[in-house]
Image (tube, rainbow, N blue to C red; front, top):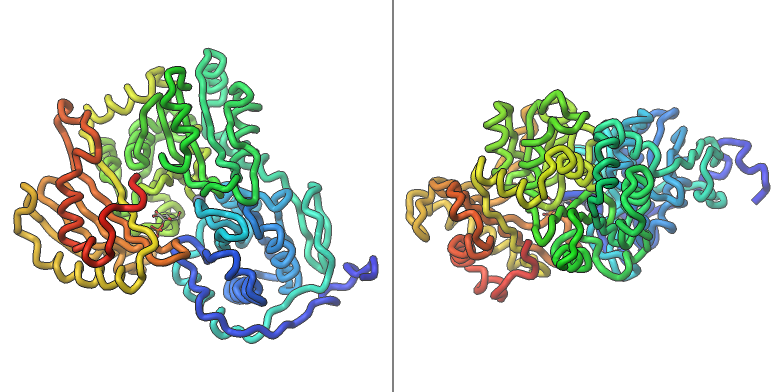
Length: 553
Ligand code: G1P
Ligand code: ZN
């Protein structure tokens, strides 16, 4: 390659013939497939060209690019940059070494007024050559592309004849600063700096520093994924948490061999530390791309639904939320704990389908300030993605202000608002035909149940959840089968939209307990009756051959 190859725009752009791929429909959170699928010739390029064709960025447009560092990021990044240049995109902002957590990418898009973002991640799914890879597309608001756009990308991917890519050497991504790739400027940015500054503007860092000076101890498990560098900078360097407070902080392409999924099963090292006699005061973990969080106290687990409710109830202690909340939102299967807080605060509470993209319009229209999902996702109007480290800092800010141990704070919350017992049972790797069939039969069966008494509860209603977006009027139907009881209990059934192997059936179970004397029960015991009803009414065992769920959270 001649050394002055960058001098003439488009000189080296090639047009390459591709073939239609039938399976590039983005799911709940982007296009997610096994690495082997992405490795097929033209597969990644076909999808990326479909994205560029659909987004149609202006010639001076800015694209943000980064990822969670998982396996195949290093192969995909140069391809996407060369395709961006060949497609006439003006500027690409890329995290150093291709690293950007999902929430940091959202912040960078917003801060620099970028037109779109591409995030390379399969979230909490396993990494490595046998693992998963993914491509998420975000819009100018910093949030996941809405369904209309992802459907258009999908349609394009099935008909695309050719794609454009530059014939040029790879750009070095390990040094900060600008360079050019044909006519496109590539600006390598510090992946942490802008994000850390935003966090400093939202939370009382002085109070947090004082908290750590007073001997408060924390253990943050980065799961060898993207949040390590963020947590080390913010928690250890800026806030003064002792060195070693962040464990598994070094990002690895295979996440150290375990799925970077912050739940009680996969964050077992953290769970062990938090159950030990000398446990720290606070424990937390984030997932592969840093948008999920799990919050633990000493020998105590806070459900994500409760976490959202407690953040809402205590939000005004954080400077960024001192003016109060406009409203809150939760995904439909998330427990209704936050609804009670919203009611007490006199603010609206929206119920959306599963997936962060449904919060985007509510945030953009300033109808809500906080939102969350039962799947370890919490966030606010500071970004358009859920944000794991943000939730950790919010909790620390609350603990610093309230000066109470976490468990005491949560129990006091239950006494005030009542407790929503909540669990999710996942049946993974099911035969997709059997799973669809189960849902179809269940839809019919549920329709006959209202008015009947089951397990000492009367069924109030049943439906297939449908959502009309209050901002743009768009309708999302078929979002989960619900069985609603008169005493406030709920059972929800839905099929996962993020899996890459077989089908996953999710069972969400919730019961409300206002009586403080009964709030100390074990969750699975408190919900045993409902769990039985769910298995029975769906004929789960007969239809799937499974006697028990694969994962319980
Ligand atoms: C899962 C979660 C959902 C979350 C999504 C992306 O989707 O249930 O709340 O938004 O991952 O992180 P699902 O597999 O259920 O479609
Ligand atoms: Zn994630």
